[in-house]
Image (cartoon, rainbow, N blue to C red; front, top):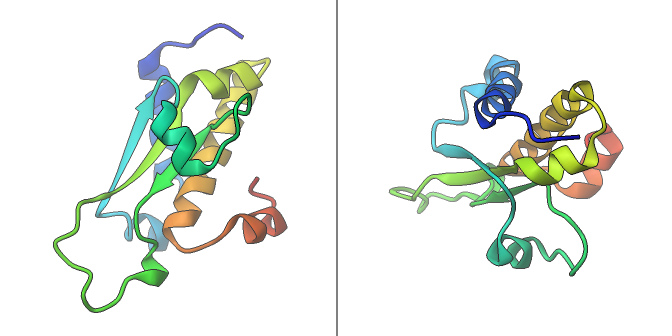
Length: 125
């Protein structure tokens, strides 16, 4: 599939966030969600992605469940959503919409302390 305009892609990410239940959306006050064209070498290293594999999104921060009493004055956690890898994986615009939703949910789940194994059990791969 060809590239969709960046603004439309950003709106898909925003839509996925605004459709979260209030109790989750209300706990995103110190999280920046960034759309990037593709992951760089640092993103791939941070995620432990081997050469030749791809990365659709990445959470960088301290999950809520791991924050203690000394956690304050911290920089925002970051969620990266990578447009080009998502588009390459999809054949239709409908698939892009669904993959963006899944990727946003997957990365935000890490913010809430949910690991990959549990996400697989929940059907959010």
